[in-house]
Image (cartoon, one colour):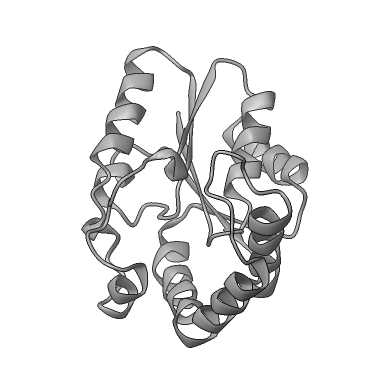
Length: 181
């Protein structure tokens, strides 16, 4: 069973998938953020302003990994990725598409906490955190917020199950497990 977990950045995808991994035996996970390189070929906001077509993303590596896990016989393949069933290749593989509806202010607060307070040591350090954060907030207000709103409008309707991103990852995962069983 392929289960996609989608949301905006900071919406709770990764935490939910990690929780599901701990709850479901014989499961594997695919994490969208682990794919390096340019999967889009343009700026994310420009893509959104052009209609936010998820099929513009080059997700061949992600699809290849889902198929590999299927061939390896995993009972549950959990996909942390932003597009629900909006991308045709993944839609053809997904048995359940979950959307985490998380208020944008909460998602932004989580992103700031993740990127500034608990930054992954494998990522490049932020040289001037306050200047960087100021730039992030300015960009968010000018362009990124509208991108997230377009994302929600195009992805949420493609999902089978919409859950509150305000619940804990444990509560969200329990609801997903209840749905699949």
